[in-house]
Amino acid sequence: MDKEKIEIIGDNHIGFSVDTPMVAGAFDKTDDQKITAIQHHFGKIMEELGLDLTDDSLSGTPYRFAKMYVKELFYGLNPSNKPKLSVFENKYGYNKLLVEQNITIDSSCEHHFLPITGHAHIGYVPKEKVIGLSKINRLVDYYAHRPQVQERLSMQLLKDLQNILDTEDVIVMITTKHLCVSSRGIKDKDSFTTTLEYGGCFKNDRKREEFLGILQHVAL
Ligand SMILES: Nc1nc2c(ncn2[C@@H]2O[C@H](COP(=O)(O)OP(=O)(O)OP(=O)(O)O)[C@@H](O)[C@H]2O)c(=O)[nH]1
Ligand SMILES: [Zn+2]
Image (cartoon, rainbow, N blue to C red; front, side, top):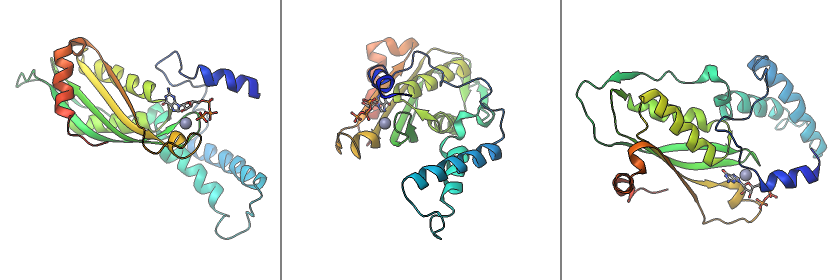
């Protein structure tokens, strides 16, 4: 992509869809085939930087890097890795706010491929269905392990939880630090980023305040 095109995307970097932009056939190759290809390309990048790939310490890096991308940092791109989310009938009729807070976010920014770290706080008001608590954490982990923008990550979590729980009454707050802001570019070490996405009863100011009140003493 030429520089002019990159500048344009720089001004319009938020995608129009909640789905991660993927090409057709994105999973035609196996993980091992992807690792082999990425290993080759990353080795070339290291060579361009002038690094000696015959050095003991560097020789395994292209493979380590490729395995880390496919199996760890970006495992959430592949829908076959989506966690199974068991939901139960709301037999006890609990119909007040439930908050799962301080869920670890380990993600990567899709513009620079640098880490985004922080926490998600997720609340919902059950209707007919309740979800196993750990499944909320697992879903966050899954969507975070893609190249992301924070806004889209929030929306993907909201939409999926609304579908799974069969209710609009879900709220997702994410507070993070972006290394692309703190460690390069403007190098601002202190700023952080918060997004808030919600539907249903959380459109009501008092319901949103109830959720935010619970989070008052939560650290980043
Ligand atoms: N809205 C949003 N922007 C993000 C996110 N992660 C990174 N960015 C921004 O994406 C923008 C990309 O802008 P560009 O001007 O194309 O890139 P750049 O020249 O590296 O910009 P600087 O970071 O200002 O040096 C930057 O402003 C980033 O801070 C995110 O999750 N959401
Ligand atoms: Zn970035």
